[in-house]
Length: 316
Image 1: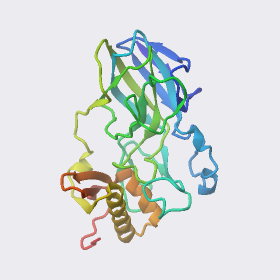
Image 2: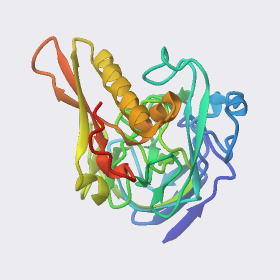
Image 3: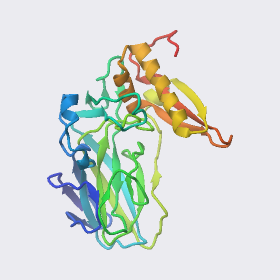
């Protein structure tokens, strides 16, 4: 059976006692209509000054909860992600005191992206492929009370795994009767690390097929991704890889991102703010090694395929 749940009512806290908005059966398909992460407070071409005034306590804005009939603790939801549809725009911000580099960016900044079907050309010199996904897909927590949605956990939630894209299948452990499935915080694109604080935050709909598996315990979220892991324009082209090592993993990551910002600014003439939000939506931060204690190596992969024009001889 097909179901639809609109975004006329949203939640911004996990709370197992929140009333269900929809009841579905195992094997049903549901389309969820979702606001952007701000709950509709942000609009296209909003100024940074007005963005700085939004109610940040309303983040994240989630559609749900959806009751899955018969779901009980110890069961498992298998969520097949069938399709996303964006609404033509997205935003990425810098919020003072947040993100990976708060000491470098003390002022608010907001960039609006115009989204085409599968790309955006809203940053000078770049054509960025879109791979939409829900930053938040989760079920209600076992604990009673209200909990902020920012920390991810055993229930899924704010995982920000960019491969929660169409074609992938997410497994979540059920912790409460009915499960209480919620989703939101959609991103049209995101780098690994989401370093400025956001991906391309966008209102969207997502279509999901939900199956319930009884008595199938799961210690945490599990994702099946059919691949490829990147669009061809990224996977089939070179990458610029910035490598840093440090005893503190965040220090190494900061140096990587600063080098990527400098490269983008030098090559394209972007402001540091533009380059930083670009890193947030395209740079892939990876842990290259953990074994050479106490030093960790972090690498940042910046895909050449996003640049509209080749620039031979441009070195970092």
